[in-house]
Image (cartoon, rainbow, N blue to C red; front, side):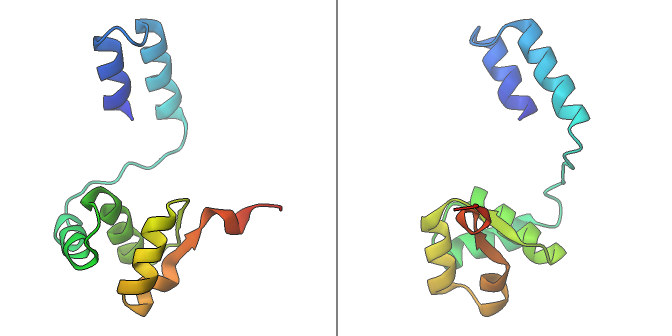
Length: 102
């Protein structure tokens, strides 16, 4: 996210003040940034096994490593996990819609 804001500012798509505000808000958000160290191999393995983009598989690898729920609105990814992943990974994945009030 920080990199994204910086790139937009450099291209003139985001004002300098907006980019600085975005960085300040992100730092204060309580979001925990996680290193890819130790996740890349598992994410690559998942991407190859599931035939799915590696960037999504990084999140799956992190959820798996930490035993956390993986919540996503990506129905294609959810279908792929349900059809091709092992039961332990399937159990971690939840559709965002499951949390709606509707």
